[in-house]
Length: 347
Image 1 (cartoon, rainbow, N blue to C red):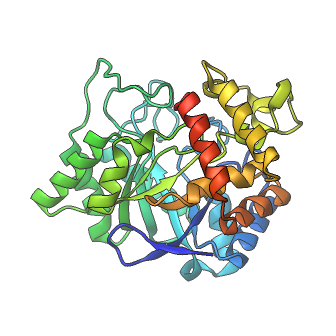
Image 2 (cartoon, rainbow, N blue to C red; image 1 turned 30 degrees about the vertical axis):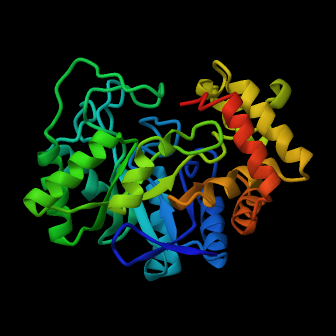
């Protein structure tokens, strides 16, 4: 396993991160524990969670993922062997069950303080290594398109949000802070405010990056190069589509689309054609489509760690093995040609 520096921290994280958002929904506690054990054996040293997990977010299951990670930490006595990353929810017009009293999720100081305390209790730890803003508090479109669209509404000041994160760092509850689903303007604004006011500097950004969504390359990658804000990329498999398991309309038992039918972002425009082309390309070169997609993401020069998730141990083993795969130049050239034919079709 390769290790890369997280931001400017001097701390090295594995090139793969174990994502845990299926724990408590598609995976039981025992299955989650087995995955975490195996990930540690294979050299992964960072796990990623969030207060809203498991996915899909529901009041009934909310917090189960962190609780499963917490029972693993308590039983394995392995807190010093792994970095725990989790996230506080951003602005929502739907999620109103995270706090003790019903209220829509926002990144107000009060809600953020409530979130960190509850995450620490569920995780059974005194501190979180990386605490991330899951998505912005600003009124904007998130998860629904590639173009920025500002929506009506107010927002908590970035300075206020960063000051609250600073409280967590000063108290020892958080080591490092990060962003997620953020724009170039947002990242640079947080960095500027940190510099001007002596507040914690974002060490990472967790955004989507995969063969059908390479928009990180357009503006954010330069920030990674120049400001050393690490990319922790999620959805390297396009929520499973790039594995090929949904080809020809297939609905495998236990798959997310089969269970929840909420993956429409990969079924619009030229998305299906691009996905089919990438799956066919992998098979043409004798590669597993999942491993080709993960290997490609890991190999990007601006990448720090790729977040993988699995519902079975076989899937997890396949995904982790991809970190050692070096794609031949012919494969990379074919990938770039498909990208020219179908540039970034999926959000």
